[in-house]
Image (cartoon, each protein chain N blue to C red):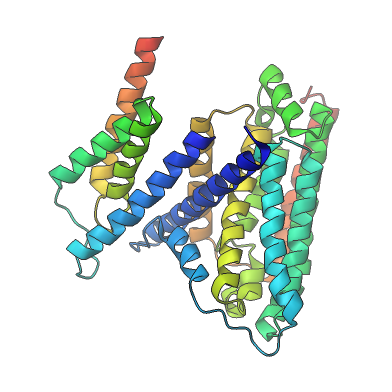
Amino acid sequence: MLDYMIYILTFAVGSILGLLYSYKQHGEPFVAVTKFNIPFTVISIIGWVLGFNSGNIILSAIGFLLAGFVMGERPGYGRKETAVGLIVGIIVYILLMCRLM
Amino acid sequence: MNLMANILINVIIAFLAGSLLLGLHRKVMARVQKRPGPPIVQHLIHSLKFFFKETAIPKTVSRVFYIGIVFILALIWIVGVIVGPVAHDSLLILFGVYAVYKIVEHNSGSSSGSPYGKLSCVRAVLSAATELPLFASIVFVYLITGTMNIGEIIAYQSAHGPLIFSIPLAALMFFMLIITKSPYSPFAITKDKALISGFETEHFGFLRGFMLFSESIAWYVMLWVFLTIFFGPLSAVGYLIGMVAISFITGFINAATPLLSPNHSVMTQITIGAICFFGTVLMIFTGVVA
């Protein structure tokens, strides 16, 4: 259970850091952002892929930290990036499972 | 692993997971109502924030009770974690935990000296109507599996398949308890906004922090118990998907349903409970359930 505690703890810390960072970057009232942030998408993909598929506690923890960072951004930001990262992470997980079977 | 370390790890997981799930629940409600809603991590930040706020104690409170009840609340849900995820012990103890929780809800309101707290305390007695379907649900699980032990129920399900397929109406009764316990529920008569925050109204600072801590753990424990006793042996990913799905479903229900008045709430719960109870009895006697 220790590994799950580390994952959830790093995810929560990442979310809080993401929230603080995005409020520092965007102080304006709520806007539903339509632009696609490429660097955050890359971070999100790396995060979710590492989190689900690395099989290593430290790498998974770093992955969940990065995934939480993007997902935890203030409302209106990081939604599409998280969706892309999550979908890629799940696809890689399924492909790896198929390969093992 | 050392038992104390195991308990500590499980309590931390329950608190963090419960907080994030409640944050997700609030986000879903907001999106259904076409609002942006707070970040998912907001409930967790909110809970932690209260531990560092100034704690004021009103003059009208019954001081020992007012402070003590908060620790009892935290303690009973920690017991819930120990009995459930840690020890896989008896469902009856978990039923006891829920019964004591109702008493704590009642006494928390009455000790505050506030009229809002007292009204919430009276409503806590009415809302004990949820315990009847919960008890009936546990009885059916016992009748089918022949045991109250969670570990043995898991073993039964790994041999015979998940109980949700054999006693779906009992699962529905348990699910009604989850809806009742979820924030902004149509059955949450003790926390009606007409009562400000109900029995929590007069608890400030770290006392409120403990209450939010307990709420998060309670949410996690109830989802864990529901998934464990009706969906068979699950992996960590299974629990994650199940908990997220239930938080989504309850979020949708609560966003689209107004809060019922106390008498309607109790009658609705009792009616759904009675239909599910007699439905399950009928299924057993007609041989639908083996």
